[in-house]
Image (cartoon, rainbow, N blue to C red; front, side, top):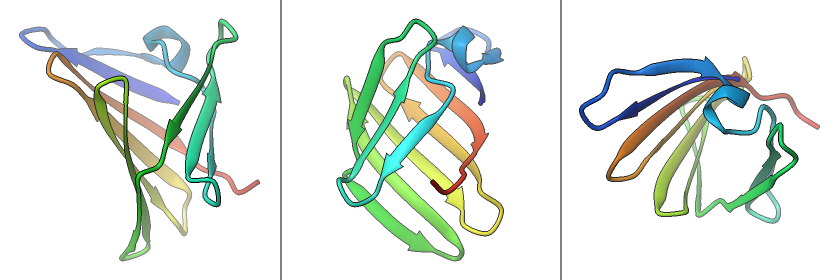
Length: 101
């Protein structure tokens, strides 16, 4: 995954997942309504999926973790996805692809 981080008043920083402190691979569990991933340093992260919606060929997941709101949009035909997350100090946009298990 690749992403961008922008903090209030700063320019955007680009980088690969490991460089911006997010897991490279995320694993959604739709039955348990959770999404998890492991960062390069071995730290595991899990977030609850609070909302799941299908709309016009997209699967839209949303939740809140560590005072950040996040959304993930997965194109169901191509698997391409974008995750956005923000709090009152920074915003993130992460581009990737989803593969079915």
